[in-house]
Length: 66
Image (cartoon, rainbow, N blue to C red; front, side, top):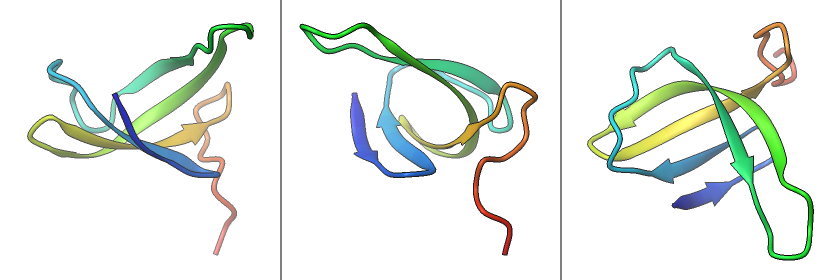
């Protein structure tokens, strides 16, 4: 379940155990639209809650540099 969605990342809850640092594909599906897929990297885990950032196809961080 998606708990928070932003421009560069999201937070979600799941019963699955995912390692911090792993890259995963995330898919959003709405009833009348085509699914949208993003590649994400797990940044943080607190029990069943995870925080991720969107990444490009090459795995680079999509956040603006500081």
